[in-house]
Length: 618
Ligand SMILES: Cc1cc2nc3c(=O)[nH]c(=O)nc-3n(C[C@H](O)[C@H](O)[C@H](O)COP(=O)(O)OP(=O)(O)OC[C@H]3O[C@@H](n4cnc5c(N)ncnc54)[C@H](O)[C@@H]3O)c2cc1C
Image 1 (cartoon, rainbow, N blue to C red):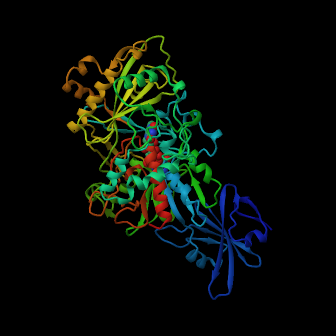
Image 2: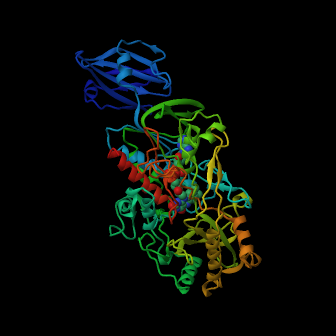
Image 3: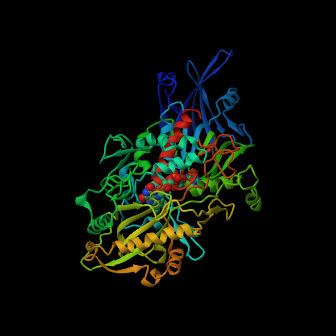
């Protein structure tokens, strides 16, 4: 049959298609949903064909025998006042449909980043679940459509730090530091689509520490299979610690690919007594070795490429890019939907479960805007309190990072398009009980910071990036406005503890020592930062650290998971927001502490693990 529908779109289908029950056709990119409706005892067997757009349900009724000659177009019921506001082509069956078949998704995932893209992909593997994935940034369904700055992992002529694919937040590092740039991905794939592609697992003790805090499902032995599940490790394949079947492709730079300064760094570390670490993702790894990277052929293998691409064809998965969530809607303490901005208009959409995967900045931000958080803070912004949860936005964790930079000799090649980071050194600070709490990445191409006039393609020299893992100082995130477009205040409070400063000083001094190795002599001309004067005493070096420390890009912990006995826990270990029904947080914000590694792998593991919890009904 051939029926002319709203807007002139024509849907071609046969009665047989309709009778097959699960028909969902696509017309002008609109999902069509076939609903079979049987009213018990009424003897009526009714079929209904729906599509939903921004404002209307378009409903076409049929009896088992034939499509009814008329259609119904009804305004979508608002969540605050359920029920049709207006109908054209009134049908006597409509109230029954609205009562029993109200269009709502089983799961609405907010944010298509490292975790959200995985949650949506895994949940939609079950055709019985309808999943809506909402993303504020754009979506590029194919590799060909992907802009170079997102696709190319090393660098492009455009700068991701000042791109529309980046939220471009700012934050406060310390009282002595200038405002710092805080990039976050705003595109499907989220921060995994703009990040440095270091693919590093936490050490087993990280996950065991989470378990010791009362999250007993998160021991390393529980997480391990999920860490494997993510990857296709092209170097170690299917083996004791790796997999060859996961969606994210991983490789390490081979010896013959190491750039001269990377080779010098490796040799200097070995000469200083650090062990060889051919696989930094081995549970016992420590020392110097090539960094595992998720960038096959230089392509940044984000969760949009690795995960969403295998799920896009599914009719039970709807991906809506360029839609910014403003707040979660509650009925009492039950989450029932979300308010979303799309094309300059506001919409509400209903879901049986809302999954907040907007990252460690936006997830607590959205909770606060929705009335879930410290009640005094909410009241100071006149936000009605849905539930008092003092931990929302607290426990802001990250890896403080410090640069040690050298000008190179004229003959030393500095190529902005070559890989920048190939090698990492991991070790335990002197007297520290925390294994592998220090990490240095060697960068073959250093530039001035973008917010100080730098250009990411203009070389300054080479650099070591000193990363402090398991910093003891924590910060907080607070509202600055009730306008969702105004970013929250990000107060990182780095290096407040002497233990953190001491470890950072050790790291800087270690870096300065390493370049005394003979292999660096033909590479380095002079040290740019820190200066000799800044290295002269602990006090002078502290000043340097407090002024120059910046983000390692690994913000986490702002909705930490923990047991009911922990008043600062925001979610339980299955991601459920405490005191709220039908709402979970699944992203980097639920880590109780920032692991001893870059955060992408662990965030993806969180996505995989909680998707399984959801499927198990936990
Ligand atoms: C520049 C940079 C470099 C990094 N380098 C590395 C690295 O080399 N290795 C590593 O392991 N980690 C790295 N990281 C960190 C890592 O990428 C993140 O920890 C990880 O991606 C976080 O995942 P997530 O799911 O928590 O959040 P994200 O991946 O940031 O996803 C959140 C998503 O939610 C969307 N969103 C936010 N607010 C809204 C809203 N209101 N409405 C709708 N959608 C919304 C965002 O647009 C985004 O797509 C880096 C991060 C950055 C920014």
